Length: 164
Image (tube, rainbow, N blue to C red; front, side, top):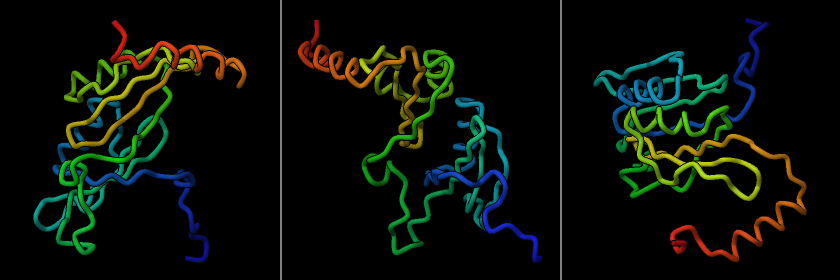
C-alpha cells in the first residue's frame, strides 16, 4: 500500500460533481448527447446512483442521484432547487454539431450557437436533469483591445432579444 498515489492517475484536475434526479438516465443521456464513456457506477440498495463517473473528452464528471435525506437536505438536484447557478463549459471542434446531438438526445437549447465578440462560436443547452452545458468553438484569436472594441460594438446594438 506504500505506493498508493494520493491523487489517482487522470484525476488531477477539477472534477464537476453533478446531483441529478434519475442517475441511470443521466449516465445514458451523457453517453448519447456528449459521447461520454461510463467509467464506473455504484448503485445504492434502492437502485439510486450513489456515485458514477463518466469521461467526456478526456475529463471526468462525477454524478449521483438526489439524496435529500442526506447532508441535512442540502444535496439536491437543480430541478428541486428551481434551477442551477452554474454552467459546465467545454471547447469542441463543432459547436453546432454538439448542440444538435444534445438536442436530439433530449437537451433544450437555452442559447443557440452564435458567433461572439470574443472570437468563439458559443451556445448553451440544458440537459433533462437541469444542468446547463456551454459549448464553444474558437474561431478567431483576438487581442484584449480587439475584444473590448467588438464588445462595445455588440453592446451598442442592444441585447439579442431586442434586435429585429
